[in-house]
Image (cartoon, rainbow, N blue to C red; front, side, top):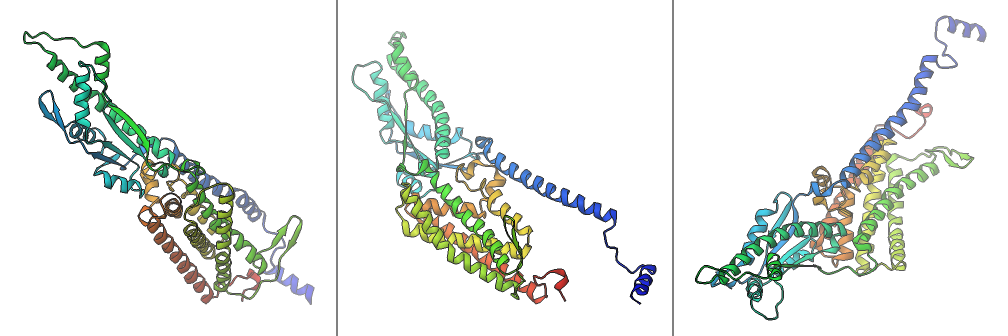
Length: 448
């Protein structure tokens, strides 16, 4: 009977073949080779585009780079005429420096110092109160003996905003002020020559050294505002610390996801040649996610404390230790919860989504090594919501700006809270929906 039944089924074409058809087998083999190659190529293309666009030519991407312009000059009389050279220089700088590239903000000295101390600007050009007076004395001294000091303009940089931003400020101000120096020098030389003109129309020629001094009368002094202490890596420590926080949340979430799934029997466990696949536990998707959230929440304060212990051991100054520990813990939880929710919602594809969200797009838009105002505008747009930029602002504010809310900490906290809320909502809603639809995590043969 059994043989006859099998024969009958075969005659009617109902028996399933023991091996897949050659065409089907070929398609599977092609898919097995091609699919990973395509995914890796696309991912690396995106990574290469983001990273190279970020670093190749920052100066060409400069946009709205904020620098303060402080004109304190009271003016004076030069050659019998009232003058305010500081005002002339300010007007010249505003006209020469492209406003689409540099946001030159005219303000008082107190406002400039406040903005430098709160990470609002990258530098300041300061014209002193006695600038015109000193310029007049300098011009007179070119023909009259006496001790003089060269008129000065001070450029304050903010090393706490990063070493590359300091270089940009120096390059921008050096180019602009060198042109101003030539213009003022020509004007000053004409004034002195007019004073030396005799009634008969002849003039006394200036000696070569005097002409050289008048040609470039302004001394530009570049100083660091609130210099960084030792152990900060020239300002780069804040960026790498922020990256460590992101990696703790992102990588930690992926480790937790794999280990919990293995323990619950949803994925095999492998250590070298050792392989085991436990029976799948009768646990809903939502409860599984809650377990993972709980683990990352308990792990975050431990990792935050480890980071601070290592930083202290290596000589990194931490003036606001409680704030750094609290925010680091908060950020790790927010990133970890969101990363776990993405995997719960999208499965294996969630790993790629997390990699792109937190790393591939995060690093070039962070502003940690190159200011956001010196990267392509598309990347600068990403900085508005990318997690790494928000975390960097918070870490930098705590480490370098006395945990000031205006220095970026308030924005970092609110954006991190928003990210945590989105992660919780995404994970809870999607896993609950999957559970209600009966989309349980079981092998295909075990589904009813």
